[in-house]
Amino acid sequence: MLTTPDVETALRGASLRVTRPRTAVLAAVYAHPHADTDSIIGAVRASLGEVSHQAVYDVLRALTTAGLVRRIQPSGSVARYESRVGDNHHHVVCRSCGAIADVDCAVASTPCLTASHDHGFTIDEAEVTYWGVCPGCSTAPARSS
Image 1 (cartoon, rainbow, N blue to C red):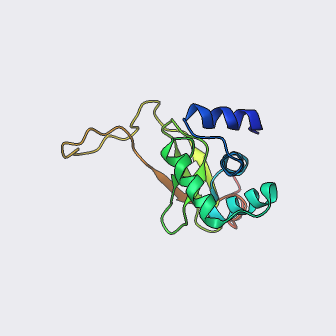
Image 2 (image 1 turned 120 degrees about the vertical axis):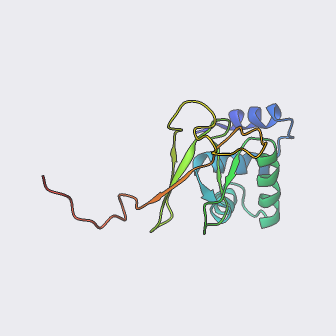
Image 3 (image 1 turned 30 degrees about the horizontal axis):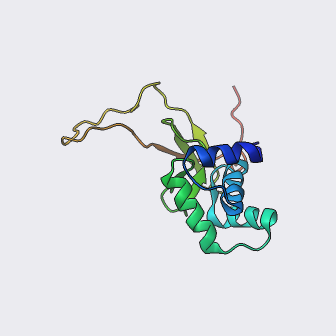
């Protein structure tokens, strides 16, 4: 869990003013990986009391622009936010409940996939989303050997 001084240091390190909403939003993203905006708003309100939707949206945008959080949006899902930034990792998404987990890159270099044709682009990242059913939603009987 990120402490308040850690959050404040991260904000200052990104040249952002330290404000109560920024501190609360960043702490909420760290505490709730892959949370959607409504969940973050709930966590921030539990911490600060009343705060507007727009204030949280504005803070999330500023944190994302500053590189302190990453915005992901798996197909068919609302935007989610995570604190794991600065590495090339991917995600696995449950088709049933929408749970999301991090998956490290299969090969330790960026990108982990090579495009068949780069069309002149300098490719520096590959975004992969794995889809399946999480253990909690799986209803398949266990296989016997």
